[in-house]
Length: 336
Image (cartoon, rainbow, N blue to C red; front, top):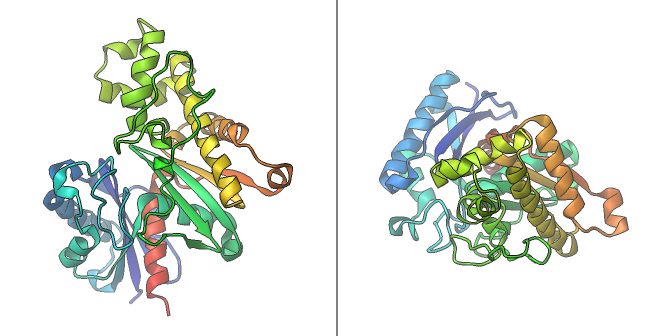
């Protein structure tokens, strides 16, 4: 019987699952997902994880007994052991989530060892492995994952840097220079974590809904999105951007510039081999996502020596990257 690990990526709206064999083959080439139910609290979210696990095993015709471990990721910030932070998590803002031991709860429910990463770290690990292949252990990279919030990950010598408390790579909550990024009269954006002017307050779905779209609608009176519920309108900005809508383009210009400024900071602190961009902003047409990454590159200030060797790329396999990265982390953990 082939041994496998299961990767579970818990997001703000969906929980996605995958299966990875012990010889490195993914048995799923598409999204296998259920509603994450995180807004309904921990009990509902854990039940959804159980449902996602059962579904992916059924889809892949995998016996439960062949599963050796679970790779789990959730949005951060969270500790290295998978305990949700007491503040600052966009997707787990309710009090019942503060200090919740997510990893421990999943391990208890599924009765299997659970290896935890936050979602940005998981996607970063997968991007790094896919991009560098056998050379991954000698390379470093930084990833920005644009979703409901802004996840990040730093990989050095092929391994995710987790930090003393497990919160390394939280690029979304690092404050960035706003000079020249905001236009005259534009308010300083605020993040759900309480910070002003951090990366997530600009480059995320919540940043669009709370900060960018309300402002730009004042500059484009009569825009069709003005008559749409703000939460729904924020999700529609991407479609407008792909069609060349001017308001949407202004929003994505600001997001690309914000990510580039964060990468500029990373260039001076870490000097990585590669910079990856992932998440919903890249789940678009080839032309749009390629153009977006080029805007990020243009906004990233590198020294001449760095520009010669650094790569800019899109996280491969889009929304599957988190679950796949979690599965890779689990496989690493159980291998001798």
